[in-house]
Amino acid sequence: MTPDQAVSAAVAAAPGWAASPPAERAAHLAAVADALEAARGELVALADEESRLGEARLNGELTRTTFQLKLFAGQVLEGAFHDARIDRADPQWPTGPRPDLRRCRTAVGPVLVFAASNFPFAFSVAGGDTASAWAAGCPVVVKAHPGHPRLSRRTAEVIAGAGLPDGVFALVEGEDAGVEALRHPGVAAAAFTGSQRGGLALARIAAERPVPIPFFGEMGSVNPSVVTPGAAEARTEEIAEGYAASLTLGAGQFCTNPGLLFAPAGLPAGIAAHLREAAGAPMLNERISAGYLAAAGALGARPGVRRLVWPDEADALTPRLLTMDLAAFQADIDAAAEECFGPLGLVVTYDRLADLTGVVAALPGQLTASLHAEPEETGDLAALAAVLAGRSGRVLWNQWPTGVSVTHAMQHGGPYPATTAPSTTSVGTAAMERFLRPVAYQGWPQDLLPPPLRDDNPWKVPQAVR
Image (cartoon, rainbow, N blue to C red; front, side, top):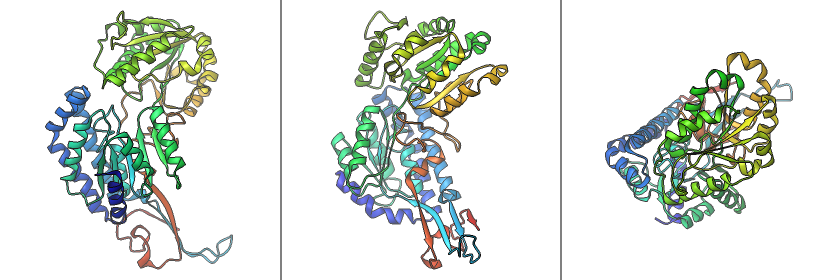
């Protein structure tokens, strides 16, 4: 199917899909989840061949994928995402007679999803972007990631067999096809997970269209973690072990990988001891492997940087640990705070905790920020905590950022350049909000109102009536 055919079919399907009753739409999402589950063995084997992530990890990721499809099906049935508000006519309203006003959120239209490389299920063809767009009432065209083409095609076949209405889903392949689809006038929004370079290039295309569209790009970050003197003294071994484990999880191929750590001078040696024991792991593909080696080598050669854990073989895909002091980091912050996709950690040592507030404030936007401290230190941490929250979308207390739970309160997004849309999330039920827009109806007859705004409320959605 060409991009024009895929988007045109989505445009034709959009009104009917947006108007589908909640029970019907939810049943379709659940049917896709069940179809994926039925094909688990075949899909996981394909994913392992193409991604080298291992069957244990991939089985867990497929479970996450089917779970989030059913979680969004539940949101469709609940109906709160419509945000239905009804203001009845009030001739005594303080600013003048108030007309009958009814407002709800409705689907934006066809959504283009760019699949990610590092999550071949959860952020790919049937992943969270697709599930949340479907739940919001939007048909989806997915641009497959070249890192797992056979898995993408087979997943699309499984979805096609699950009984979705025509035009509600399509798959296109190739960089040119993705750009063509993004420029198609029928696409109403796009979602992307991947590199900053790729995300910004696509964001420019979305903004430069004759009719610009929202582009929701999640582009990663270094996810700074701060260890206070009290925590470093009380839990040296625990923190060193936890950081090393988080840094090397999945060969460091997570957008929440804690690549930057601020700590007192004594901690890097403990982390280095754990990382020296960590074995290397295959990365997703040769392009990502080469990118990791190049980025690590470039940072390792910067002024003021010392190599604590570094292999003798330049092309070894093993963890690496660098360190530098706070003054050197401040002098080279642009390069030192750049994301490296892989198991590379940079520990920045400091003498005074108070000196970190201004440094953290100067960091680019992040997906996460973590603070490791002792309870008795909280009275001195207000300014630092506020800065960490100001620079990131999710702040963690005495925890590491790898592992993003699919739940209602999750925020997976952050200030630019971590994302192109800081007010949104790509994980959790609030991800639906990206693909909805509000419409207000003034004085309309009941039979022409959308179901969420009618007095008889046929979909039984929550209504705020005033």
